[in-house]
Image (cartoon, rainbow, N blue to C red; front, side, top):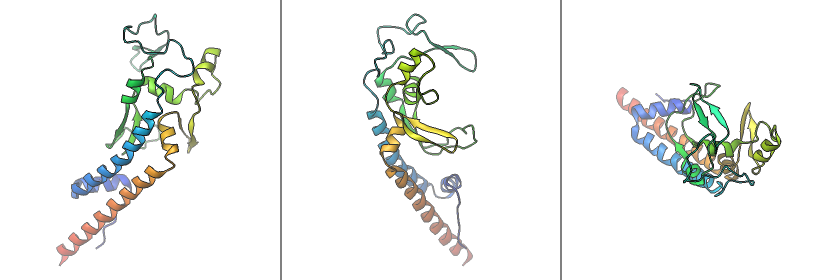
Length: 203
C-alpha cells in the first residue's frame, strides 16, 4: 500500500529511522543553501563599528570592565554581563548554520534547519532599532541608526535585521525554493522506497 509522510519533522524522523542514506542526502542538499546565506550574511558585517559609534570598537589590549563598557545586562541567574564590544571577526565567526532540532520558540515551534547570529554584538547590530526605530534617548537614537533594517513582520514575528534577514531577503527566495525542493524530493524518494518494500512484503 502507498506510504505518505506529512510534515517536515515527521519526514525527517522517518528518514532517520528507515532511510538514513536519504536523510544524509537531504541534509547535504539543505546545507548547500544554508552556506549560501551564511556567506552572504557574513559579507554584510561592517569591518568597523558602524554609524560613528565610538567606544563600541573591540580593542584586544583592553579587558572589558565597568570602566570601558558602561552598559550592563543581567542574565536569568542575575549575573552581570558587560555590554559586548564590536568585533567584526567574532561576529562573522558567530554566523553559523545548524541542521539539527532547535529549541522551541515562544509559540512552540522548532526549527530543523537555520542560520543563526550567535554573538551578542552581532545580535545587537542585527536587530537594534526594531522596537524603537528612533531610540528612547539621544544616545539611543544615534545607536540604532546603523543602516536600514531588511525583512518584514509576519504572523506576529519580527523578521527584520541587517545581516541574516538581509541575506535572506536579497536572495529573493532562491535558497528557500531549493530547500523545499530538496525536502519534497526526499519525501518522494522515501515514499517510493517504502511502497516497494511494502509490495515485496505482501507478495
